[in-house]
Length: 150
Image 1: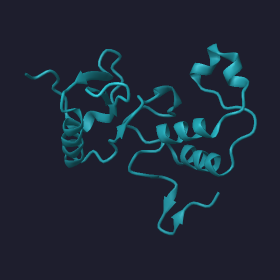
Image 2: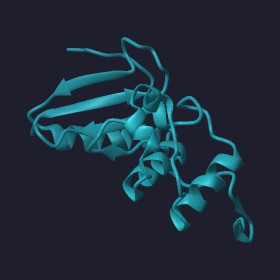
Image 3: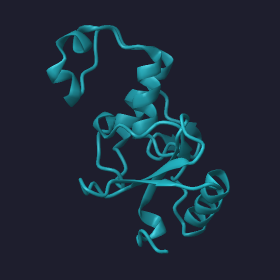
């Protein structure tokens, strides 16, 4: 039975749930509130995910990946399907090398004052880097000589 009919190049990520052997979620690029994520179950989940990922990559969408946690859209500086500018990539690279002192804020932190005042952890820096840099790699911060010096 057909349960969803969307182009393969609209898939942003496949989420393989850790707590269930049969559940997975397909995350879409477009931010349609009712269908940004679709959750499915399959007795052959891993085989289905491998086939789906192969199909998505064959369609030309090389930024799709399999993850264990859903994407946090609030950590992204641009909508899914749009590349962030070079300043965002360079800033996230700098944060990987030298973690910032003080705090970073995001829209979710406005409701939680304690979270916005705490120092940022390396795990949070990695989450923000992964939310903003495509799976296929850096786009703007790379030249023919290599990564831009910062």
